Amino acid sequence: MDISAKFSDKVKHLEASAIRETFKLLADPSIISFAGGAPDPDLFPTEELAEIAKDILQNEGKTALQYGVTEGYVPLRNWVKERLKSQGIGGENDETIIVSGGQQGIDLAAKSLLNAGDGVICEQPSFIGGLNAYRSNNAELYGVPVLSDGIDTDRLEEICKEHSNIKVLYTIATFQNPSGITMSLEKRKKVLELASKYDFIIFEDNPYGDLRFAGEDVPTLKSMDKDGRVVYLGSFSKILSPGLRLGYTCADKALMERMIICKQVADVHTNVLSQMSAYNFVTKYSLDEHIEKLRQCYGRKCRLMIDCIEEYFPKCVTHTNPEGGLFLFCTMPEGYDTKEIMKKAIERKVAFVPGSNTMIDDKAVSNSFRLNYSASNEENIKVGIKALGEVLHEIVD
Image (cartoon, rainbow, N blue to C red):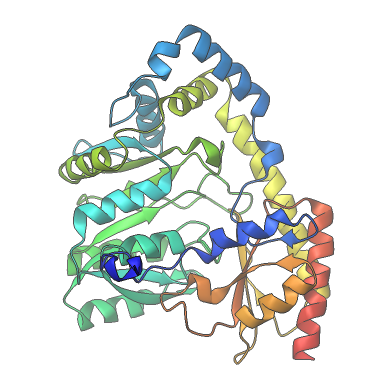
C-alpha cells in the first residue's frame, strides 16, 4: 500500500525543515556546523536547573507531575505578564498564555486565523518554521524583501493592493532570522499604519529581542499596537534553554480563546515541570544577569565571525552586520547556487544553511546563505570560516 496517497492536503506538500535536517550533520564531530539555530550549550544554567528540578520533585512533585492548566502555570504566566508589561506589551484587551516553544505560538495563531487561500505576507528570506506553519494551513504566501533597515514597506503595500486575500503579515522585526537585520522604528510605524489601512493581522515573532549586544533598543510592534492587530510571540529558548520548550504569546483576548482551544487539542498543556523550573530560575536568580552573559558572548562571537569573513571570504561576498541575535546572512554575486556550494563545503567539513531553505519557493536557486555564530566556540569559528572561505575562493576566483 502506498500510504502517501492518503496524505491530507494540509501536509502532503510540506518538506522537512532542511535546517533541522542539518542537525544530523552534528553526528560527525569533525564537521563544524554554522547551520543550526541553537544557543551556546555552555551557557545553559545546568547546575541551577538541576538543583531547581530536584527541589521541585522532592517538595512539589505532585503538582509538577500532574496535568496542568492549558493557559500555563499561573506563577510563571503572571511573571511573564509583568515582564511584558514593563516593556509596554499587553493591554486590557490582551491575554497572555504559556506555549510549548515559540513555534507552537505561531502554529496556534495560524490555525485560529487562517483558512485555505488566505494570504500571508512573509519577509523574504524568513524562518522556515513559520513558513511551514502557514503552508500547513493551505495559505497563499507572498514574499517581501528584507532591506538593510527591515521589510520593504513599499513592496508590502503593493502586495496589499494587488491581492484582496491578505490576512496576516509575519515578521521577525528584531534580529531577523535568517538575516540578523532589525526593522527601523520608522518602518515599524509604517507597518502598523498599513495593517490598519488594509486590515491585516501582524504576527510579531521575537525570540531574539533580549540578545542585543550593539546599538539601541527599538520598541516592539506590539508595544505600539493600538488596535489589537499584533500577535506577540516570545520564547525562553534562546535566553534559558530550548530543551525546556517554553514560549509565550500575547494577543487579543477573543483570538486567545480560539488559540487556547487549539492548544487543548494539540497537547492539553505545556510541560508543567519545565514551567515550574523556569519560574523558580527567574525568581531565585537574576535572568537579566544571565542574559547579559549571553549578550557579551554572542557579541564577541559575532564580531569574530565578521572579522574572519572579511579576512577569508572573497570580496564579492557581502554580509549583514547584526546588532544582536544568533545569525548573519551572506550574499554572493548573482548566478551562484549556495545549495550546490553547501555540498562542497561539507566535503571540507563545514556546514551552513543555503538561502533557498529560507525562501517561500524553496526550490528556487539562491545566492545567499545563513551562518550561525552562537553555537560554535571561537576556535571553530576561525577554522570553519577559513575553510568556507577557501571553498568560496575556488568557486568565484
